[in-house]
Amino acid sequence: MELMPTENQGANTSAFTDVWMFQDGRSSGVYELPRKIPVVNNGSVSGSIQAGIRDNGINSSPRIYPFVDTYNFNLTPDEGEVIPLLPIFKYLETTNFRLVDDFNGAHQFGFDEDGVDSIRIEITDEGEGLIKLQPGELIQEATALVFNEIPQDGSPVYLEIDYKGNLDLDLGLIGITGESVFKDYFVSLRSENTWKKAYINFTDLIIASGFDGYQIVIGADNSINTTEAKIYIDNIKLLHF
Image 1: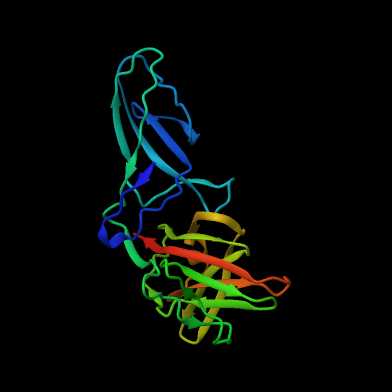
Image 2 (image 1 turned 90 degrees about the horizontal axis):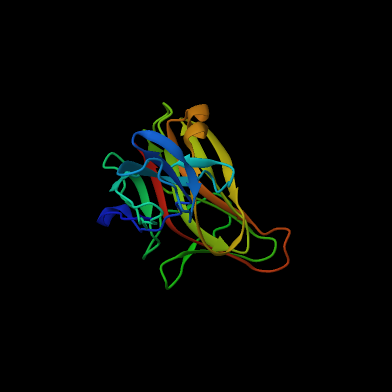
């Protein structure tokens, strides 16, 4: 399965791990890819596929990704025939892109939360964000922007991020109302040697906290290790309706 964003919607990276299948208006199951999926009826069948993700990078938390459209198909297979499908998904027109950060030339994470000005998110020649920590060092960097008017009615709020590295990556929110501030590192993504994509579901955290505005905060802690740590990040998007 592929994602086809428009020019202002960032990169086309995705991690659609499952399909939620409907045939002739009825659910026919959730299937982890790659998979051969049986056709329920003989003859022609009309169906639809919704893209599935794993919330917060947790394998036991499959979800339909709410911000992409449905792939529809009509098939008339012969008995025993295998028909390959390559669904291509687009973001729904109602999706609000509050942040699209591709780390090409600059980035949005310029608010220093750790008090150490010498430790910052760098930009590589390849246009990726790089967190580099020596033994004993940590980093906490937030978006310079405060995002107001984030929906708190249960409407989904997600952060997309591509990442890899040899240290766990922490992601969360800083909530702000007047003089009140809170910080919650909501998710810790395990270190990965190859590029992975995660979909961070902030919906419940925002409902529970109810602040007027939010900053996205990124953190990592190399204080107990004896070797240099590097984490690469890219294609960060904050989405809601």
